[in-house]
Image (cartoon, rainbow, N blue to C red):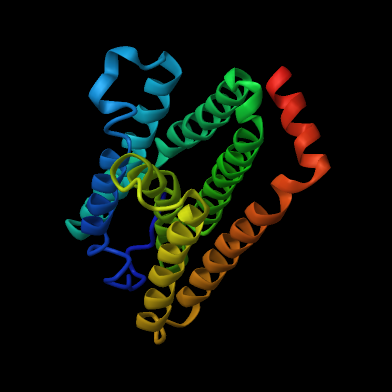
Length: 239
């Protein structure tokens, strides 16, 4: 998101045509966080405000950047991209701080569930940071850069869609939450991999993104049950 070689062809799917899907995802996020946050802003903690502002800023950047490329505003594309060096750490650190706050306030009877939530929260924040780092590392290779940036948007699906199911579709059993959210991510990536089959090197980024999400999904089913994680969660809550 920081730099782009204007002489290199950009796949339309990931370049100038990706922003409407970010708006759709943003709509899902607003719906998911409407009842616990947007409908009661005065009751939210300052840390929550910081996290939401950072999330909205990131979504705004994902919408703005392809439009700037489309209109050949590469200077502004780079300038806004440099802002990610502030927005992304703020987003990740506020997510970690919120996870610490929530598990620290959890009553004893909710501790097991909060340990699971803590893992998916911290692991998703790490995944987001890794995808952003890959995008920045390939900022001079537009085909890879754009796909890794799109991966950061997919990282927003689980926290947003889980809250949609909790607050708007309560008939969905909690045991299915991650199967629904990760199933959607897998489906999106499968479609994009098929559509991207002629893109050459750029397609490899999608397989990396898929592998990282699969690793997160499998880890979420195994790690929170281990004694090591439960001990870490108890330590993390007490710090």
